[in-house]
Image (cartoon, rainbow, N blue to C red; front, side):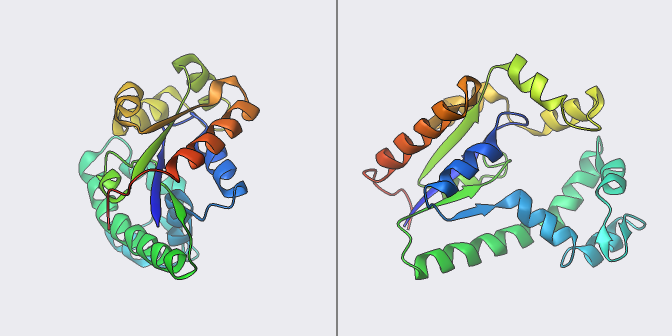
Length: 199
């Protein structure tokens, strides 16, 4: 089973690109979606214990949690120490299940793929990118986005140029969905003939 990693900085079109892979029949594990699920059950008591007052009605209040951790590297590391192992466990379960079902290729959608060393678990990495002005315009269309939030998120992420340099494949989302879809199909065709790095 060939494991493709997918990553890209905020506002680059990573989620849309992940959907294109899923539309081609590729099993997908979305680390962000898993975090959302964990914030509604398994991680809630652990986060409440570490950051009292950040949960409401048995779920993590993302805004309250963000206020507590954004701009505080120690708090962010503490949060990651709770969440990352749980996400990794879910990923391992996903990979085992996909292998059991005979999948030939799977996609791990991980925003901080390089930053957390998850690229070492992948046979190839796809980086989703777009010019900085396109990225900025997309990000500021999001409700509640501020310069401070944008800067805090970018600080945590490897610069786009470095991601591009480390990528096996690039998807440029600045030229429209049709072009991005075509790039995804081309990546899948090429990945099918590539040697595996792992397992």
